[in-house]
Image 1 (cartoon, rainbow, N blue to C red):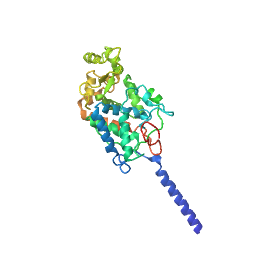
Image 2 (cartoon, rainbow, N blue to C red):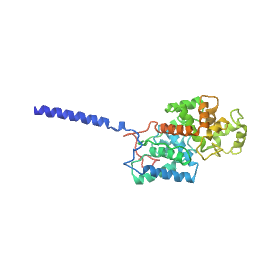
Image 3 (cartoon, rainbow, N blue to C red):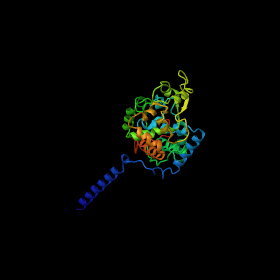
Image 4 (spheres, helix red, strand yellow):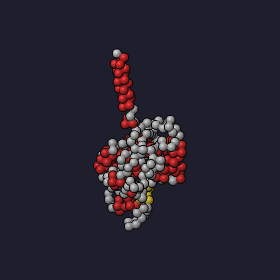
Length: 325
């Protein structure tokens, strides 16, 4: 009798242990706003200090960090793959056409990582640092802040092919193509318009808007086009920079949407948001209500930052952001 009692007790224990293991496997890991509270409590403060210092030195860096986060999340998800350099096993996304010569801020993320590593070695991922940096960059230039959920891990791969072949929306994309691209990543048309509002800060290279300012089309203000030609000659100056918003180029506000209504969007993918299509009403709404724009931008940034993150036992925690351990 004792044998059967012990036998059933053993089976019960094993079933309990199995249930406990299943319910606590890394595959059930979730992002959490308190993820580093016990393992690296000063991580977010350290990241913020690094980002503030970088933006105080160069205001444009705020836009660059927001763009870097966007270009990371749209290729393989928010996994810091964009930060990887070329190596025997990696073909870097930095070489992709949408990134090469224009994506910036890598050294800022690396600096934040270095400081966090000194506090808590091997704990905080580059993917999380990039996500937090985007939030801090927005706040630094007068944009909204939001609660960031953490716990992402870093990829061990990159995809130059994805970065080059449509994962990142083109600056010449028509409206329906843009809507479809964002939908593929779980983002709505409203999310797309709100996120495009990040172009209220930052600059673009002449090569990206030359065709628009020289085509004399009906969708561009003639005076605006004429003024932009001064910094973008028709046959030279590809890398010359122009502010995406001439009026308040360093402040995160809703002037970007007012520009679109006046046909003063610098890129084709900007102006197409207000061109008689389905997003016209959203542009008008944001042009009149800066609080709604900032609220929707923050919500869209949260959604974007949660595109297929690596969790639990997937991915790694890189020691430096540009290379796999």
